[in-house]
Amino acid sequence: MASNYPRSLQACLPLWTLALEVVLILLFFFFTTYDNSVKDEKLLGPYGAIFQDVTVMAALGLGFLTSSLWRHGWSSVAFNLFMLALGVQWAVLLDGFLKRPSLGKVVINMSRIQRATMSAMSVLISAGAVLGKANLVQLAFMTVVEVTAFGAVRLLSEQHLGVDDHVSMMHIHVFAAYFGLTVAWCLSRPMPEGADKKERMGTSPTLFAMLGTLFLWMFWPSFNFALLKTPKEMKNAVFNTYYALAVSAVTAISVSALAHPQGKINMKHIHNAVLAGGVAVGASCGLIPSPWLAMVLGLTAGLISVGGAKCLPVCLNDVLGIHDTSGVHYTFGLPGLLGGVAYIVLLMHQAGWTSNTMISYQVLMDSGALSFAMAMGLTCGLLTGLLLKLNIWRASPHVAKYFDDQSFWEFPHLAVGF
Image (tube, rainbow, N blue to C red; front, side, top):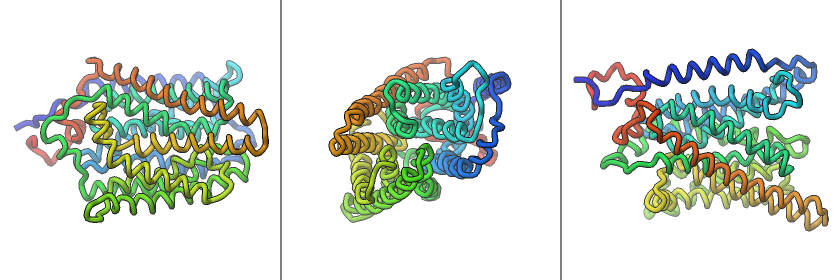
């Protein structure tokens, strides 16, 4: 007896992705060149180490973080790699096209590839909200659109609002979270009876998801200081990120046990809330002068994340009709907003002490940039979600086949459907 699952993506995925890859190759052929300067060779060591850390976060950290669903592990890890590989290629070109001073070729150096990898992480965060409910063709389209939108948001924030490169990149958490939530709202359909069984976490997949959490926890300081300029800021960023992550980890485990009637710890809280401190301290990590401030941010972010994991799924599902598969709202969205507000408060405090009108002006601009990132995430996510609902996307998984690898993967050992 043949499997009851629909045909996979053979009619659409190869043609769409191969055509897109050919276009990218042609763009690289005509419009790019390598940076062969001695300066770039000297920077290869420090930039190469940071690039490696960020790549581990994107490929292993975010890949395994979303692999806790017991029948969706293959798709979670492999689709994450697919989106990362596609997104980095397009992000390198986009960064060059948006920032090149003349009509000459885009010069590719280690710094540009590093920023492209960080920008591509936006779609990896957003995809967690639609995990198990979108096919690979939809995710490929979502990758191109979101990387483009985030690049445009960063460019506008830097050129018109005066936001520096580091802070505009740290808005990735807010932008990506609300982009993904809006796409999830557009793609939402009533869940059939028994769908919650496939969405539950399995023991072995949960261990792999915890491995992703550990990769992100270890390498998050590199992500936060990657775009800072001065050695003092970079040193502060490493220390403050580490302390914020440490406190959020302790908070997550403690509050998770406190919230359970029998004092048991929920592994889903650990997957998400232990990372909240790194998200919350991102924008201000180079400004914070003392570890206790970073620790307070980590504590607050951990409380918000665990509280969100307990309360928000019911609110989003029942009231707004948003099914957030991986909890990107309380892992990245809310801690990202906390971090943006904390950065603005620190600037206001600095302006109060120095009476510098330029800092006061920058406070206003940074407040606008944070609001702009959130608004653009919601708007671009809405437009992307509406496009992804069109019937041109073939082989979309039926709602009864949500959170199931067999919709997309070959299982030679299975002779019949199950």
